[in-house]
Length: 302
Image (cartoon, rainbow, N blue to C red; front, top):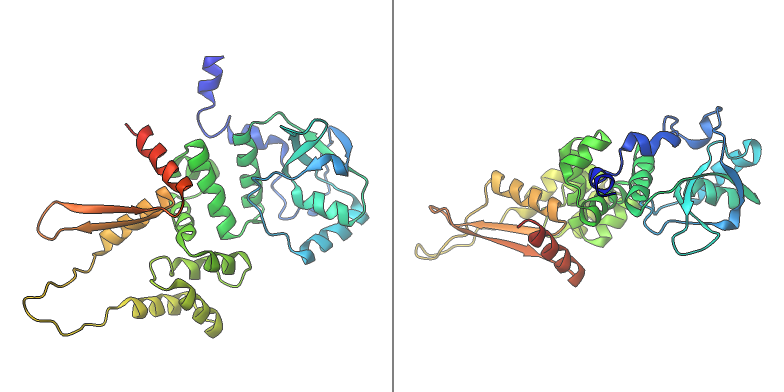
């Protein structure tokens, strides 16, 4: 038993094994005309959504479109479920919540399912991967999924990138978006602001104000970058020769701050004393839960 447990300390028990029953090749669920054979048909009310489902946005238009397809063709790809941990006789959705929601709109009484014995980690991994492969997640939802894999299950950015076929920089850049104010994250979730635009705001002092200006003027990403640079350039007051001047951080220091912020999911500031090898590292947390997470990370690194 110990050997089996140790073998699963990687990213789940192998993503290819986990995803063998999830047909992620089609761009949309109902485009494939080669349906899988479900394990069983279950009453639609027997399914419950997964509270850790990374996808939070289900537009009415998309659900209605899928609902019409289900009325005509039925649910072609079965919904992946597991026995609900705390509800006897119920099944928790692992992959396919949108199909389940659309089936309700189509007034279906039963839905086809594939039942799998999965733990919490494997459930989250499948939900993230299926949505990413179908391009169903917005950038904020995708980043939140990566953060959950890192902080709940101890995976590194490198391990996630390798398993999902993504670059480490892609993972890091998305995680940086979680440092933006909730209002700006909502703009991204709603499709009002692209992930590229949002990335330019990570280092801005007033990201919400600049975000609204970007949207109002319909600026390109390059124009947004120029706007952020202009807003962050300090106005140079007249100072006496004896007065100390703030040292502008170089590109390497800013990049280091960004990488550390992405890795921890918290704002990190590096202040290096000029002419020395000393400095100060500041980590800012916004809740006691984040403080507990930070303590756990520091303790586990000993």
